[in-house]
Image (tube, rainbow, N blue to C red):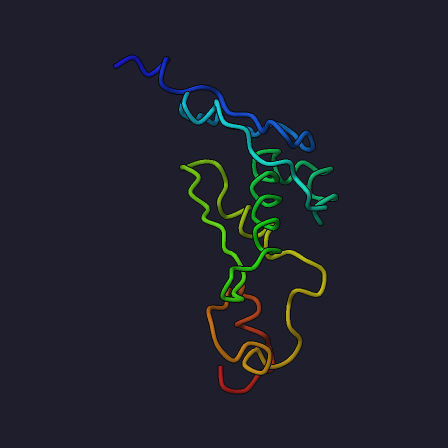
Length: 134
């Protein structure tokens, strides 16, 4: 099979901010023929984009994920977003960018703020000095 005819170079088509991703990203020819929705989310990553700490492809993922998170299902639950990028795209950076919002980190007891569900925390939050019961 000729892989040159199966894949094409990927570049965000609706988001022009940010530097190109440092590694090549490809998508299938059939997927490249579809157009994503127009972005309608004003992101919170101006400094990171200006400093080149997040690529345009990574920023695109954050913007589309945040657009989904603003919506609700008929059951009243918030919509989710599946991040299925391949190796080398920077899923860790994308996830970190999603949780980096002003005042996003709780103050005080985590259990008081998050009584149920899944919580992603950084190592520094778990190993604060001077806390009893580590």
